[in-house]
Image 1: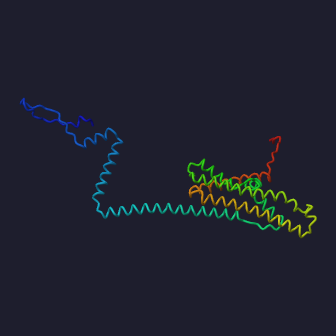
Image 2: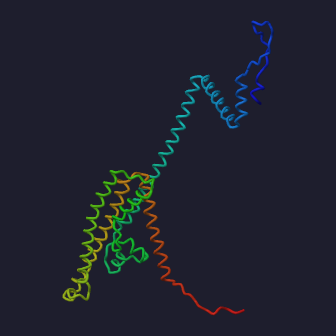
Image 3: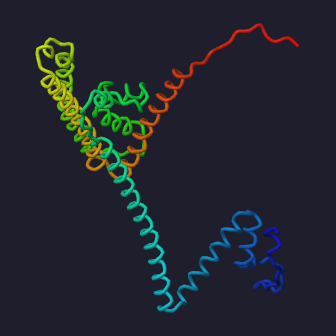
Length: 294
């Protein structure tokens, strides 16, 4: 429809010359204009209908009684409250999972062994149930220090955009790193002292030859006790760092991100160690033949 079709012809009397003249007088209604605009732009008709629907809803809402408006308001509040309650429950569940994981680390790192024989000490230093490559990576002798946990926090903060580490937390992290390195140095010295003096407690050492059997056994038991003490001290320091990171340094979301990354690294090391162990036990043997003839 063109705008010309919306013009209507009317006869009007022109004063002054005494005759009638036909003139075109525009008579356009709002409905005509709306239909015309809709025909010119197809998408605008949908917006117009939405606008008219909104106007209709608004006018209907104005016509509702105060009691109906109150009931609508109350329902909206209940919907929002239910959504907030669901969000809070999910956060509580996340807190419970974090606490459960931390308790598992505690039971693992605080596990002590009373060494009464050479076999106990060997299992304490080199557990047979852990693949050698994994043991070399995650043991203290393999340079697995608690400060590596703090390094993981820095890596996550630098590479993960969702990981929010404030300036105050970064200062705490730096201070914590300095303090833990001091404690690590003390443990390293205790380890070095045991390594330097353990040969004196072996059965073939001159010291043991000059002692009675009971005295030599007591000397070995003392050495075992010192080894157990240093290893337990190192394990407690690891748990201390984990607890500080998960409870004091990071917020709930970042703690969850950290736990996932920390567990993933340990599992990757374990899988790598298992693969190396299997290759050592069952080496691949390649056979070179001349081929089979039919």
